[in-house]
Length: 275
Length: 292
Image (cartoon, rainbow over all chains, first blue to last red; front, side, top):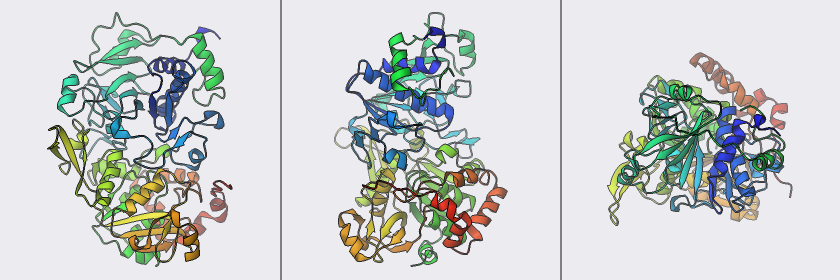
């Protein structure tokens, strides 16, 4: 196993795994379409399994928001329908079949979640509703779905962006369906939001975190092989000085071993070498 | 009651709650009959939608939609829906997913609104004057009053009911089926299409699973495969081949008119629609569930 063969997806799974703490509850939806499913569902699942096998054995995984700690070895392919017979029959520890159900959303049972969007802006607002203007938009998308809840009622949110270009990373989103940090933490407080918010934004080019006091997204690390100029020109807002920003940490040999041989031996979750 | 008669209970301009969730267990035979009867200016209120809303939009039946999602999941965007909104022909009122359920909870509780505290800064609030901001009378913190679903009529597709309208829900169910129970308890006019009408002895043997008792049910219609092409959990899977076949027809108004002519307008009744699909296709969709 040589380092040259480490894929982007493996790297992102390991970076995320370090974020999770023991006893936490992590929520991932079932996204569809190859890129969105990989970023929004598969990488989060691998990351949570990796955390469980290393430092967080009591982490609870919610697959599709409903299926607690699924036995993924029972699957031959990643499910792509949340409420289908396939997931009805998947062995799990607890199956949520009602709202309100097992997890108590509004008391903060979900420690962290993953979401995806078409646009994200420098404040960390996300959009899955439309490309401007709202009443007769250029592009109408699916709707807010669970994003408003993800960005306020979950303890923290990992925004998983399968594409990183100027049209996705914009100065201001065309519709705020998930609230970031307008006015920083004080601004959120003014809006009545004293819990949650985006923690990281994960893209094929870099990882962003937040200066939450100022309410501003900033580059935490740049992936291997991505140039600083290329990163700035793919982003629709000013990233500031990037010369001191480190390269994203590679997974350790032990982490790679776990991902490849224990978590995803059938290559069902992360396609090999496609990063 | 016949399907035709049940659909006549829904007048033009009604606020109609359509059960199921996203691409799961939608009352599709009912939707097709709404289109055949050329219902107009309906307002659909629900949690998450797909083929139901997309077909009604394509056929010009809707004035607006109040929901959290309209899409075809793995089959992509809902193309009639998308086209109508981009042309400014359809109004959509966006609600967050769990708040969409909360609106039905408000109706179930006989309340005019449901209070939430997490919509500050969200454009769901900015664009919707029906959601009112108020101060929590205890702490003074900002809160939002989300209007109740307030449907005039609710339509769900279930597995079985008796003639009187005692509706059975299988023990092995998921979120969409329990969502239907909530919807059926949130409205005074409830129409239930079922896979099979059963006798009272069957109902008595499954009394604990009769989540919607007869006095809540306005009409029951037997329609086997009534959720097709969406699945009915425990009876049949999604017809993915048909769903894929729908993608192109819904991409333009002309193509949709042809699809609608073939699958909605021309079949003399629901059984003629099933004939069009064919025995082999339908048999291949069987869900054996658990045999234990």
